[in-house]
Picture 1 (spheres, rainbow, N blue to C red):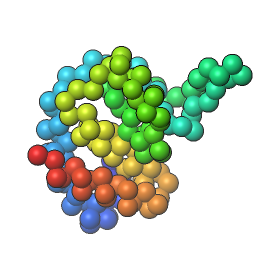
Picture 2: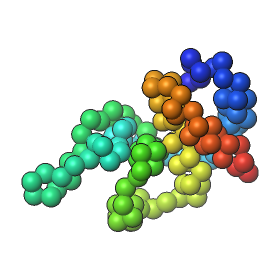
Picture 3: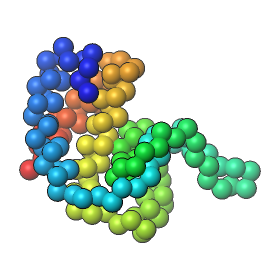
Amino acid sequence: MLNKNSSNKELTDLWNQCIPKIENILNQIQPIPALVHGDLWSGNVASDENGNPVIFDPACFYGHSEFDFGIAKMFGGFTKAFHDSYHKIIPKSDGFEERLIIYELFHHLNHWNHFGSGYASGTLNLMKQIIKFE
């Protein structure tokens, strides 16, 4: 994942510190694979003429149901009502907040790699949060 940015020493150093933390956090769960949107953020959500939600531009795959929260958070998230409704159906489990940062990091790394250094600061800040995990 550290493709063209691997020459960034801070990124490489933080990544090496993050790997064991990420592995430890993700090895503690056994998610049931769910079909996720893959690119669920406010720019890919709208309403039809009757006010019903419409989502589009999917990058679907089977993964952890929490995965979509990473990119949603990266681009401003959704309303409290959305989160409350979601977690009524699928309650938060222990470690949700840490996994959310890991899933968001995936998207920051991906965007930095594809779209440039405008994503560097956010990426490095998330990595610094992860290395503080117990």
